[in-house]
Length: 313
Image (cartoon, rainbow, N blue to C red; front, side, top):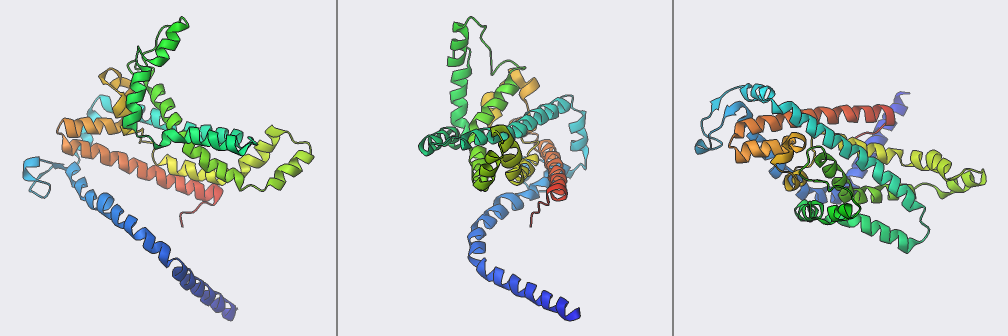
């Protein structure tokens, strides 16, 4: 028994050494990205100290600052608008996450049924194209299309329906943000799920068809279980962004008229920090957001490992 255990340990050690040698080039390829992450993500984390100080720009980041402890965090909870901003963020981000999973899956399943390869490639290209456009460009396009005199309201008016102020009506604005984000990004998710469906053994579909299974039954009992792992992975990666409702998009589209339903944590931090000059307070709000996101990521990974045996390493 001792000899067997020792032999197994030696074999594992040799395998680790062999894997390290084979992956050396891959590790070197990752080196530039690791350096960029250190420079732009970890080194700036020193600025977190601003959340516990009464920061004064004239003294500089490393100057002597007045330490105020948790007063900025306490003040954040006392502001009347804080709860509404958190609600707006969670509502918009949650629906974005849910629809960004369901819509690409549904479209990928339909796209997989297209027999013609040129037609299939054309559909993929059309839905994937908006993903490459920035929100600066798309924001200007949407503002023109969705304005009261824009294309959409012109068509609506021609049908005898009252025009809708998509970007100025508080009740409509969140849905405009959610649906426009899904339109922009679902093409990327579609490609991921199409690739996952392609890896499913086609013989399973042939056997199911011979057994008399219809399209719905084949989809539910073969396609869905076949892509379950990638769905859980994408959901796990998305949960960490539950408080990221899309700063660039909302900043390009919103206005003071829709602050009540469209203002999110990121836009609030931007307005209070860069525009209002309350750097310490905005840093405290951003730190709270990052802390909550970190907890959600940990919880999500735990359940992913427990129910689907998904591991980071």
